Amino acid sequence: MAKNRNSSDDQYTKEATFGTLPVRRSERQYGMLDAFLVLSGYGVATWCYTQGTFQAAYCNFKQLLTTTFAANIFVLALYLLPVLFATKYGIDMWQWLKSTFGTKGAGVVALVLTAVNFPWFGQCAEIFANTIDNLIRMAGMTPPAFLHKPMGLLCIALGTIIAIAGPLVIKWANRIIVPLLLLVGVAICVVAFTSVPLGDIVAYKPDLSFLGGDSGAAYAIACEAGLAFGMSWCASTAVTPRLCRKERDGYWATIGAYGVVAPFFVMAGGVLGIATFIKTGVMGNDITEMLVTLSSPIMALTTLALVIFANIATQGTGSYMWSVVLKSTFPKVKFNIIAIVLGVYAGIMVIWGQLLDYIGAMITIAAFFYGPVMGIMFVDYFFIRKRKVSLRAVYELEGHDCYKYTKGFNVVAFGCAIIGIIGDLLIFDPIGYVPKSPVFNFATCTFFGFILTAVLFFIANQIPAIKKYMIRDREDITV
Image 1: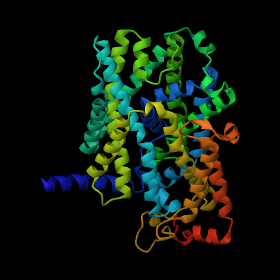
Image 2 (image 1 turned 30 degrees about the horizontal axis):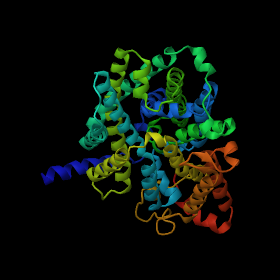
Image 3 (image 1 turned 90 degrees about the horizontal axis):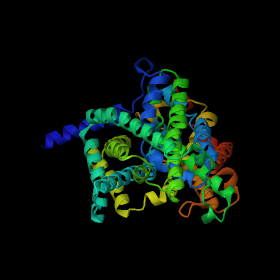
Image 4 (image 1 turned 120 degrees about the vertical axis):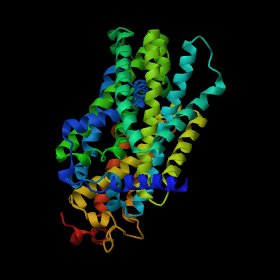
């Protein structure tokens, strides 16, 4: 038994290690279309629809289009320019972070970004539990209250088992998840645009009484939600582009998938919410309940069944992906332990039971961290290192320690990131989800945090002593 466990962990160690090594150009198989299709499959998870209903509560139909498509395309076209790095060097974001935050600092950033990102998978489990409840209602019975949270935990448990089962099972899970998610998306679109007249959807106006009728602040909040959602893809954007043959292919495939395809389904979720509001007077946040309300029994039953399997597969894929990230960062920790800890973390969210009520807080708190990190990486890559890093130092080869900085931490980068996070907190309350400063209405906190940190980091690096501290890798660069 011990031998099998060790062999299993060796498999994950190999995946985490060799899966993050540089991919040579001769080994890369993806063109733009290939990468676009793969990334689009990841981008159409069921949380898109919850995101859409959240944004629709703050804006009308026309504004929904701009806060989904325009916001995402804008934020990703700018934030994800460093994706060019992934294709140039054939490495992912988690290795690249070492050059920016230090060899040990990268591990801290990975932990923080995992902590603020993984609640999305708790949301998957919550949607799974709601789906079970609605299936029981469709059978003419009342779902017992005590069953709800155990069903959410079941989704997490099944996803964790899939993750621990290894790469082969994940490969088959992805083959299942992409078609299922696309089928769910098609069903959502059909129901959203046919359940009420299109004219009523276009004429919809949100109830902004909870904001005192302030439409300007409401629109800014919707933009913030859209920008934060776009920012949430940053952690996983470098994995597929590193397999592309050309830099522009990896970049535009990412922009197309996360800036157009994913927002399309966010928009569909928003329209579903608007249609529910028109029919019932209540803007829901649970796609399963809205489907039951708006669609025929057969359509609802079919879609709910698809949602069940899609959420289990999403849970398994997400658990595996983030476990590999943490395994590559902390190689001495067993993969199974990491996957179980992440499962427990998501389980706590389900037991808490209010994740869907705080969807805005979840995505914006994550953006509080993503914005400053991406701002620093953007400036560091294009203006400080000028698109050149030392791969030997990134992979910590003996004698190549220019990215150790101060005991493994780049204190300049961390200092700027902390100031960026504080700046965000000064202009927006992520829990109450209300602005605290007029600055928010013009910049949103996601974009403000990115810009503030980027500018601060750029100015700091004009100081000779800091520039010398930052640039230690010039003589170690071979490409």
